[in-house]
Image (cartoon, rainbow, N blue to C red; front, side, top):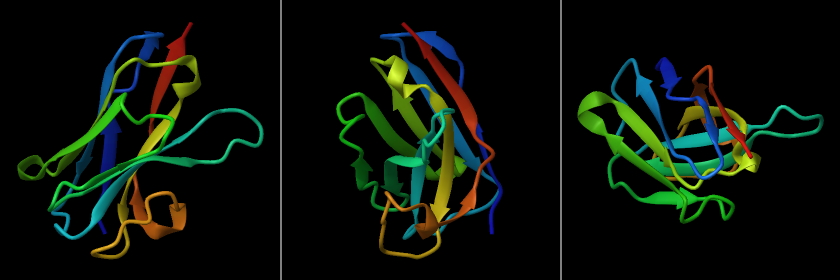
Length: 128
């Protein structure tokens, strides 16, 4: 089990950029994947998978809604995963969470229950 801490959330205008960081308190197996999820503060809104990356290979995955605008990367020496967000839209407004997969060698990045350890979240607000 690791402790994850997200940072980098802020309020920005549409079209702006942010970089979120997710730092782990310990080593993450290179066969694990790290996921980024978000949850908008609106009734009925569920947490949705945004992007994920295998910490070893760097293979990454993206939701269609962010493809081409968001980039997930990792710095294994720092036990940190990043989510670079550009061309932000008001609909990107949400609490963003990172998480580590429970299993090795697979990444069902759209499923919350595939992930075990979660951070506390960082708020991103995009105004029009």
